[in-house]
Length: 398
Image (cartoon, rainbow, N blue to C red; front, side):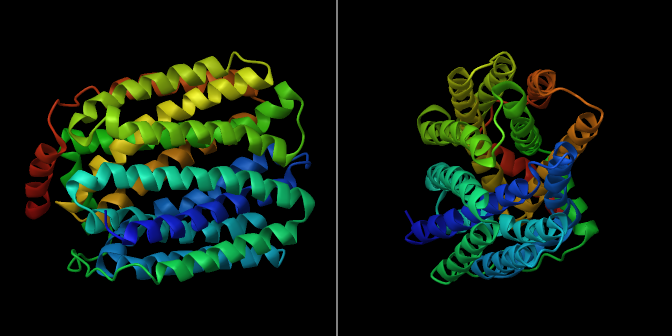
């Protein structure tokens, strides 16, 4: 495997660690507030808005510049958001700037993989990236929450240090020449890319499938903040963060199992993991004590990891061979974050109206089952390479 992959893993680990530490730092600031029920979803929505609004531009931007440069720019925006929070600027505004950095960072983070490794190594590289990211989520969530419960300035200083180290690590990545530097940013080009990918059934399934997963994950994560105090009577950010740890452990396990169970040429199998994800969320709505909740969260995470890793790899492969890997990831981010923004906004409205967490979790489970069935309805038994052939001519015509 390319020697730059371990460097990318390290840089991505630090950046993802800081992303989650700063989220739980912001949550710790308002967790005891009477407005926490609706403020936390709004905080998360502020982060997601940038992915939707900037999607037509960040993909071509990532493909026109060397991707390590784009990664550095993304980390710089994230660090600026952390500095604003440290300066006592409204957390929603500061976290929105972190979202801008993440929107810039995302297409380069995943788009660089097909440029560094071959087709046969892409699923494994994705598994390593996903595993590294989830470990960072685990540690960032728990360490960030503990640090914030002790001292908000200390937690933010930790976040800033991680962004700075990540930016420095990116300097060690190989300088790969852009492969789609002719692409021009804008709504017209973005629409052309969307049309090209959506003509292929496999690419459409990958795009909508990842959107479904992240919409459910975003709402479930917020529901844990409401569920833990209501069911387990917990009232500290650390205790809520420890619940998400078990969810993340499951995703790591699922990501490690993927190369054996769902190779990229057998993408159709991923729909079974999506069904298991919906069943697991429904089961979680029926638990009322700590250890059963932890066990079910691990199972939900395993299903999610088994679903997301091969679908991500398939979309990167299709994009790399047709519209550009950065463009494909930007489209993916657009649909994922639009779905998350819609789902989180619906939940924020429901929470403000007094929706209880347990029936809300059950509703998410039903939604995942129905949506997984619909998005996989036309999924063919073809390999990803066939989907590339389907997608490429559409881009040329556009």
